[in-house]
Length: 484
Ligand code: NAP
Ligand code: G3P
Image (tube, rainbow, N blue to C red; front, side, top):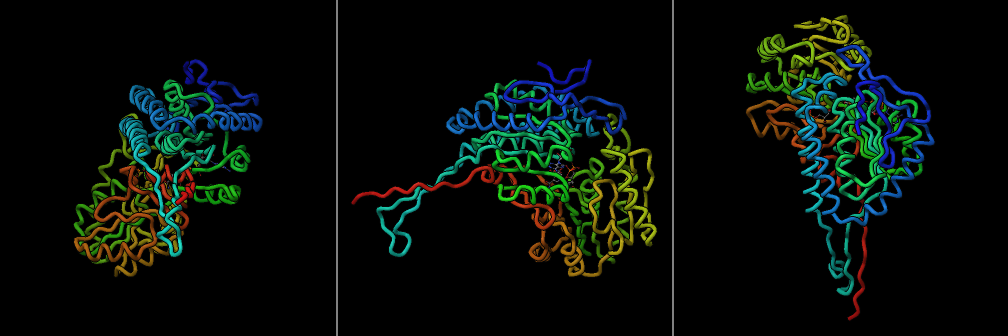
């Protein structure tokens, strides 16, 4: 059955294995960020339908929890196969819906299939442990603890627009392998791609009720789902404001949050500047900087700043700008609102004395890659996450200054350090408050089995395949009392 109907372009909810229209009778129109036309519609779910989806999920989870790891693996392998088979169709929808180049969109789908396969294999190799009672003073040899992991129940997966397939499957696959059922709420701008991904899961024959697709605006239905008594765990990726709002609502429900960032590229005086420039450009401007892990500011030593800026300017002016259909690196932003925000940051910085090196051209929601020099702490762009193609340069005169500026940020996702002195790199790495430090490379999430951590305003908990599975289970201890 097809859900992306070209004639009506209306997508359906997927509840208990059935594609269905919402009783609300309302749909939400999805407009392409670069075609500027409606490319589809998704259902605006009602509260009653959310209740039903959660009830079905609990029903389905009971048998799924009993299913062997091998049985779970069979369905997920089929899902990965379907995604590979449907790669072109799905990539086309990602491109149209979130304005990502076809090549990047295809990579996203293939990366997702790899992610699912690795998740299966990781789950197959995860073991519990046993503990002897007599290891503790006064403990008895007759006591043996068996520590196993059990599923949490129903996981709520909420994903953002920028990786509508990958970051959704990165929640659904570990949840399923761990024995949970899922309520999947995609970003509204991303729901067409998310629906297509669920269509692949449906084709894989996953037992009904295990994954339920609920679409609707987060601002309308989000709080209701998050506060629902039937939800046992929440895995959320999105903005810091949404994440902290959600954390308050979730109260005592286990929660993993992957939020925003303001990743610095720290460039020391001794850095290989050609390498640093290449990595910074790709880190800052790919997909117009709409990545949580984008390099969002450069903290460069004053003695090499002019040279680095010259190299960055040259590279930036060569970046392909325009439609994702032409494979451009810098593409229209997800919405006009996002473009307004980025423009405001640029204007604020220039008004306060920043020097425009290149860029600051806007055509509708397309912002040309923009480089700002002499950015200072009183400018918003020094601290705020633009989620757009603007890179502020902050000149520093010491490692300490770079460390302080990094730590003054409300965010703590990743940081890059460019230097030829490995001891200095480790020394700086040990002093900065971020989840991961990249030495001589751009900030990025992958490979996806590495732990992925945001601290401070960048998140809570750890992702990365093994860690994600762990976060969707809890330990359970059974103690054997042997008779002598
Ligand atoms: P967003 O606006 O925060 O939305 C994220 C998700 O939350 C969407 O599904 C949204 O639904 C939903 N939502 C909104 N209000 C809600 C509520 N009250 N209750 C429950 N759900 C609600 O983020 P975005 O613009 O899609 O994504 C960009 C942000 O995500 C950036 O800040 C970026 O750094 C961050 N991000 C972080 C990571 C990471 O791994 N750390 C990865 C990717 C992105 P609607 O779309 O219907 O509003
Ligand atoms: O913003 C999404 C995050 O998952 C980034 O992934 O691979 O672009 O660093 P990546």
